[in-house]
Length: 225
Image (cartoon, rainbow, N blue to C red):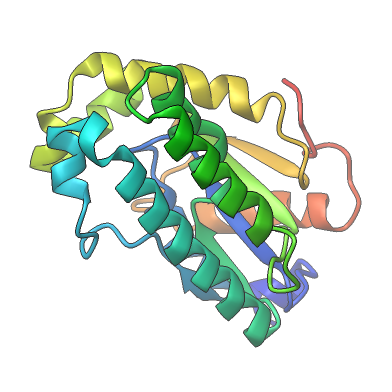
């Protein structure tokens, strides 16, 4: 019996991994997809034509970057719908709107007109029949110091060159956002409490917690800390 059957995870489930940059979303996405025999939906970073320009000049490129991510994520939502679920998704569309676009609007690196255009597009997209709210959102969290350490270890030059104040701003906004998020059940995981690289049992422990949420337990369904 595989882990999906053992823990009664629906084959049509859509599970989204959320959390700030460097927290380990891609690693968990791959591990869960392999263990559950699910497809993956990844954020397109390496092929993003705006990312380097954005990190060099937030104000000039924030709108372009967010529109690109919104379009790519909506295409992924359509793909998930067409397959009938069974996906682990790296980052949610809600983070783009509730954290990244909002942060640039608040800090005046995205104009009010651009922000209104962006949010109007988002509102229209989530009303389409292709949009599937996740069955579960897994929120990865840890101390700010631990996350900065992981960003440095990852070694992406554009991230190394970004002021630490930007990462601190994003970290605080994530904490505020998750405490008010209510579009689907939430499972909060502290990144220091599991090691997917060295502990072969870690992914099963996470799946066990996922099962508790998807099958009605309130123990791990935590919108509020």
